[in-house]
Length: 277
Image (cartoon, rainbow, N blue to C red; front, side, top):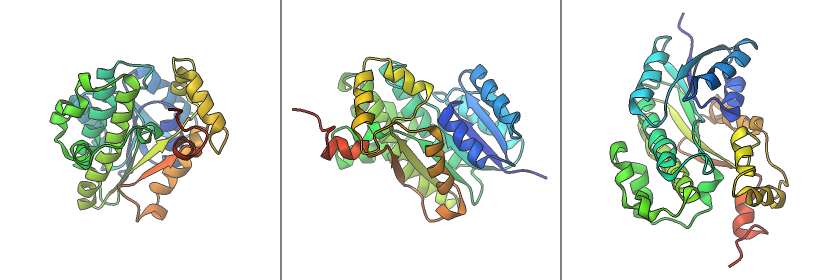
């Protein structure tokens, strides 16, 4: 008997928290660029009764994305997607952020959308950071949403000379993630499937710790200290939202982005985190 199959990308704390929450009884294909990371998470989960196969994959490569999809299809129809892969502003240069977080996510949503099973659903992880940049024009948003994936990185808005630094690149990538979810959810809907986005704030993960210790560390520490929640979050708090979105209780939710940031974005625009001009 074929079991429901779930693709999970990014062998990190958020991906694992979501997979543990909804992945029991399912075949989980866990992809990461560093196979040792996938192996480590797979061992933790398999020792806890899950069925996880680690897989080496590179989100910036369409060929690699197609390979993990093909691997997953060996076990049955793909019913779920959790995309938690990505790099942060302190981990990679501008070009890599755009290639992984922006282009790679767009390709993954596109390719999984071609094969997702009826009744299936997916979540991708963007970031509150995409909300903390000046509003784009309606045309720029439309370009991020609808430009063919192989032409995305040729957009004027994404040319290196128009990007200030790695944080700006990351913000653009995450804005694009949200717009691609809106665009792709229409195509997923034609197959009877749903797709949503979660935009976390500061979640305590190794990636966040890199940020705390990076050049913007004081900024991030100040952010969670002054947001309404007054603290960073645990990965399981993101999994709480994913569990809703990927269950029958979320059956009428698709194409949406959910901020899970302790109110940091609200505080940035209307509270003590407002930039001082």
